Length: 226
Image 1: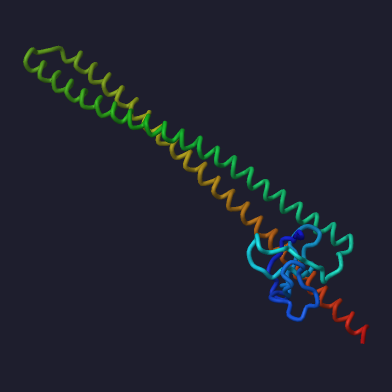
Image 2 (image 1 turned 180 degrees about the horizontal axis):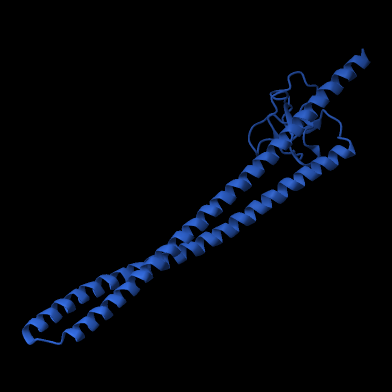
């Protein structure tokens, strides 16, 4: 079996190569027309075994186009290098974002647990405060307790209640900040995907230009042979 390059379906050069004088050595069948999509051979037309299936396909290929000039090869290497760098950067970014998301989720769970616990404490504190106030009023009525002491206790209880409300507000602000971080990460990931798509369009345009150049050279060659 022969190694066969990665390829893609180019509309102007696809399908069975009917009448092709070359056949694959294993199946003795007419090949299919393909356009290479790998390294410095990207954009070159070639023939490949027509048998479907990765295991059954013998990978036969013969080139229809000559090798690209060295400047074109260098350009393709540069483009593929940019593509792989961006792909690796996206993978690294995805891994890093996954770690950040995991840490944020763990932190969010901790905050929610702390928030729930605090809310339970606040609720208990308010109920206890209400009972204490009611008991103090009852004692005042029944025993004629000192009003000044009652006011001090009331002020103390109100201050503790304000502190509890401040703690709840801080927890809410922390949760809002975490949500903003998650949204910013999603926006950055979307921008990276858009940059990747632009690079893929540039590669596609280059391959179309190369295909048009091949067609033109073929026509010139036919005219010269006449």
